[in-house]
Length: 432
Image (cartoon, rainbow, N blue to C red; front, side, top):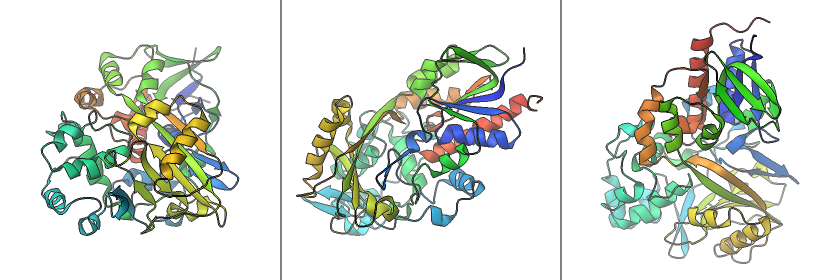
């Protein structure tokens, strides 16, 4: 009996949609299954009462995102659709925000680093290939271990706060992965955001694809020549299945992965994330008007950072209003992840008030990601080379975790690779 589809894609985040988009352009019959009621995954945007809240990813870079910019061009998005943020990041130290975090200007302003630490930063000299962090001599070294041989400020006011962008614990995640990512994306002063929400490219692609939202896949079985998907009480067959979901979910779904895949799926752990949008009756800002305040663990027990969304993207709020998004540090995330929205909002708002005394907000929009980003541990890096060289089978994968490059560029790049692998295996589409 012939299969129902050429390709079934599981997951309607940017990886799954990009893979489906490219395969459909090549003439294959493709269908996307998404467990949630909306597309976007970790690039989803919530829209309510005129406020636009990016629930996961916040920005992209003009550097190190080549595959993403090529995709945006194919989707008809222009530079004006992804405007520059144009404002700095600040890091909190000793009771005040220090401007220039993660940018070249930080060497002049200090950005929370002492003069001695800045000199040591210039001599750091660690060059890591962001596409192959496993090849670095630092692949088996955690961020915390790497930092021990350097000035304490480099961990407390640079490496740890930078790791918090990925919701990483520096005692678990690889120094090679973090240094490679920082090198790839460059100066934060040049970063951009999507004017109409981070999910814009996902919405563009979904509009021209067969996407079934609210349909969780329960199991995927490789039958040798193709694969079967169990979706509720139904079984769908496909010549190829692409699992474009986080590694822990892929491991649960794939009933019979080969050994080299199972090893990496088991090693590739993910962090969880907790973000709270706080609508305001009027904008609030800090000296220097940063769009993001980083709050290091050396200074703050609850938060990892606060995004001033109306500074980052004025189009995300109604006229005259303001919006903050606060995200918690790893310890608080574990503590509050299962708590009710009211408790989460109360704890987070109390922490924000330490930096913005007297601020009031109109409720809270709580967003949880159980599988936010790959941790990029030394164990995962060690298992990655064998996974990279896996043969092309009826079940394949795409997502930032498949190359341990935890951002949307990693997702888009691996989606293009998965599409290429699929085409090389399937060749021509099913007869209509």
